[in-house]
Image 1 (cartoon, rainbow, N blue to C red):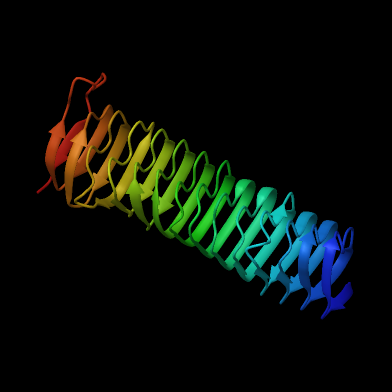
Image 2 (cartoon, helix red, strand yellow):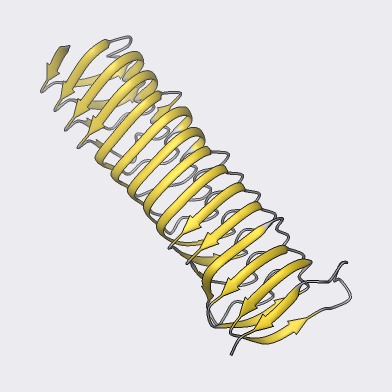
Length: 281
């Protein structure tokens, strides 16, 4: 493997087409497409400032690197990548990729990050600010995620999420085959229009969660007191610890909980209206 160390590069495509190369303490300065159409690249303790620095790279391992705010849209169309112990300040990272693993990565502008990524592994990642991370991703395995970005996990298919704390709005919309374990989900309109959403030992906060769902399952979950109009027009099987403030217009299924403040069926309620609600306190 070729080794390149302690150099600065700038301009247009300075490292175009390199392969089987390890980069150490490299700086990609202002410019565009610093590393493009490359194969089998390692980068350690490097800094990236220019736009689009890592496109069309097949096989890469990135460790202890920094991507500045100016490195927007930095990593696209790059398959089989592992990134560890990095800090990202730029938006719109990770697009149109297959086989991406992140360990101990902090993303400080998560705007439009992780779009159309397949086979994504997340371990101890922090997302801050921005909108719509994880749009249209498939085959996701998450263990350890903190996020305050808005509209996370929209149109996602086949995902398992563990040990997450997500403070957001409109999360998990239009998802299919998603299971979330041992997580805090705080935000308005959780899980609307989802199919096969399964929540296990989760705490749910925010207005009007889990409406218009098909095959929704909750096991041993809790709801914040401020949650209202829950389960409207949803097919639901749920076991809830403690109190639910309001259940509105559930479609079918069974809800077991400690107690319910209010059960509402209004003029917009749809048939069959045969959801069983069982209180245990």
